[in-house]
Image (cartoon, rainbow, N blue to C red):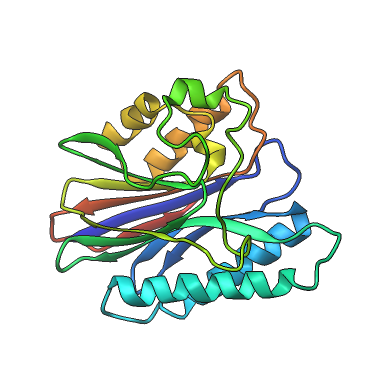
Length: 244
């Protein structure tokens, strides 16, 4: 199984960027990280989280155990810098990270917060991750207009102990994984996301389409938007990748 993947990030209406797209090779680790706590603190937290996953980028055996261990180390690193932040904004981050095993067509995913990963295939669009928010499971049309849509229960560095969600799923040729920060999922309904993923386009074209759809809405882009698209291809071609 070959992979076609791409990442694209946009600050939206903000003057700064706290999102990070994750694409680590040759391990084939993908995902998104969204920093919290103001420009300086959020960026630092996101970078600390990314650093722990980067230690896996040369590993050749994708599995949940080292991925979850990296997530726990990342949480400890962010929590440690918050101990010195009394009376000021604390740093934090949310993120959804997947490690793809091309040989066995599996994806190992670690998640915390309100970023998301979707799977698109023969069964249509499935939201794999569950938001760590009070609105998890709510009808998306209602959620997008709810005053509590940006409240989260858990994140890297938020509490002494973090409760990570883990998912191990089949990822077969013809299917697409899409990771995104809440800057995208707070704007686009699932039906719009499905339309973009259903097109027989490259990963980069899909990512660009999703971003364009979000920015063309009358609703303002109040947050950074980061998208990572990974397509599984059953054909003898070189792995393709793009960074938008």
